[in-house]
Length: 191
Image (spheres, rainbow, N blue to C red):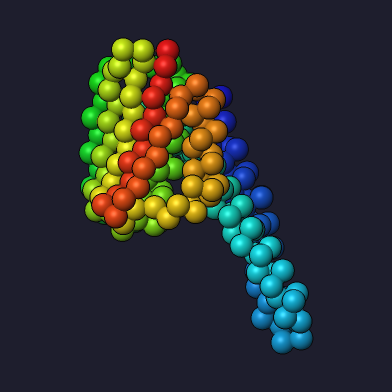
């Protein structure tokens, strides 16, 4: 799929599904604010509203992915993401020539964006480092930041679950660790 087609699909998602979901969330907000809404209904509406918010975030992520998928480099894509999210996080990328296939490179790009989004939203980090190094049987990808670490319950979130699925799709192993000094994600990619 070429870049013009990706941009067209991104625009359709934005103008269609994304706007419909936002309208739905406004309707749910109105229901919550109504004085005659019973307490037990409010609890259920809040749960639905939370799920709708997660879906909106997911659709926005896909719109961004479609618009940036054809960028030349990992660094370009991540710098654009920093601009889009108004972040001043310093990012350092070191990448050895590893002869990775296009599908593997695309997945690493999507994974990097997800990690960086999480860093920007949740970690309070000022520095992020990404390295991709050649290994005996493929490549080794590392992502780390100097933020406050990750809540263990976040491992069950949609973003990390999506990263695990992307790793599985390229037959790679994801190792996650987190301390008060930041997160560390390692991906072992086999040929």
